[in-house]
Length: 420
Image (cartoon, rainbow, N blue to C red; front, side):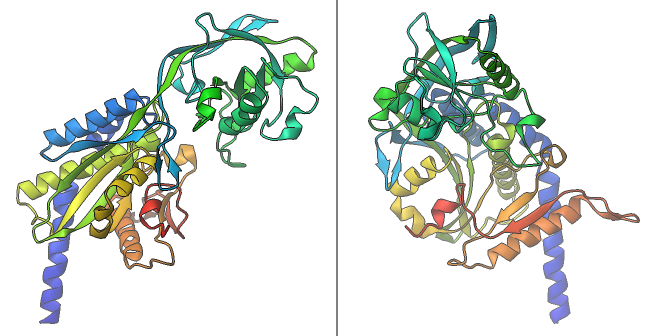
């Protein structure tokens, strides 16, 4: 009797796998990623709202009739618990030129959106011409000793937000130029590997800094090295910066939709993905957002066609501005926390592992919240790899790498397990 029941359970599990595998489409997921990555999806910006509308409209088209956008005030001052919301930001154009001792265009926002530091404000209509001073890392006071940077541009390798705080807010620099990757990994991903990349950098001004903020540009390491060579030769280097952008009070947009449960409607399982980050940012995190759309479409299709039974618990789908949107959501809906029994966060699930030297990581629940779901989800990853990459006579056909980590946070799963 036990073996018979076990056989029934296994056959149902295999049937479920086939149903999901037949419906789930990598091509559809990729098409969603392509659509989302058209937008320069900076939190509290008009293009983030456009992306949120695309996700909501797609959900409505696939049959999730309660899909909607919830909005929460985001103005650089409004706080959700200890989190200060980002200020709204909109850009029309921006360009940085080298005008002395040579003349050449360095970067244009219309070509490379990441070339303009997020939250840069407008220059005067004709722009700003100023001398360039190399301040090294630019995040420490000693980087500025003996240097007069007031009214000048600083060239730095540090994180833009920290350089702006030191150079612009405290010392009156006209603007900041950075030429480094925000996240370098020694021997894996360094500036030397992608010398023409303009790293995504943001200023994140809040409170009184909103009045002091100016603008900044991100240039490539190749361009930065050329400017430093000119400075080392003793030449005066002048740049012309022109920015048409503004800061304003805005909203954080959170897209939400549900597949209602059949019996345990007071309990919800949620799937979440952050929708933000610059154009194109296909991996971070249009990949998670696009896959989540395809998961929603697949589940809605096989449930509405009665290929599988409606789940007992409600499934909630969430697309958020990373961290800020999640915090604003649960701050504004304290009743939601008691309903959520489990969740999975999809963050950067689309990398080419050979190009990025990456590994799909399951970030487990913290030790303070132990759960069998850690082992269960990891076993599903193992099964999925075997399902799509079977063992051959030469061994495993899969080159897909995956692992599990102790809880590290750093994405939208963290807020749901934070005891504070």
